[in-house]
Amino acid sequence: MTAMTDEQHLANGLAILKQMVGDEQAERIRCGWRDLSPDLERLILGFVAGQIWTRSPLDLKTRSLCTVAALTALGRTSALELNVRMASGNGATKEEIVEAILQMAPYAGFPAVWDGLQIASRVLKERDAGQ
Image (tube, rainbow, N blue to C red; front, top):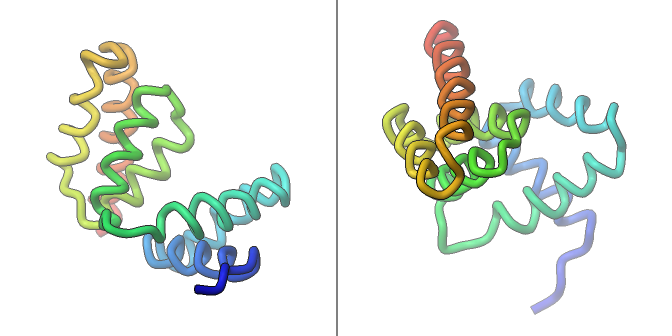
């Protein structure tokens, strides 16, 4: 098996991002990362999206719920907002997203869960208003 190049990982990462959030949203997200640092954009697309999110056997919904839980526990609010949107786009229900966040209460504490639920509630309300 031939190892993939950085460019192939980058292309795969962009494809999976577009699949999860749509072309327009993916471009907006990329521009935000690029404005902060072009290296940040390449690392997230090439490694996080292109190598981690494309692995098997976990499906995108499961990966999204794991990520929502981890970001809640870590208190990473900007990334949590994006990943709640992606989880919803990957087929996770509101109830599943809320449950993944609530699962973190004994491990990360109630303040982290409270913040996570506030973010998820806002994102999901925006999603519902846009539909």
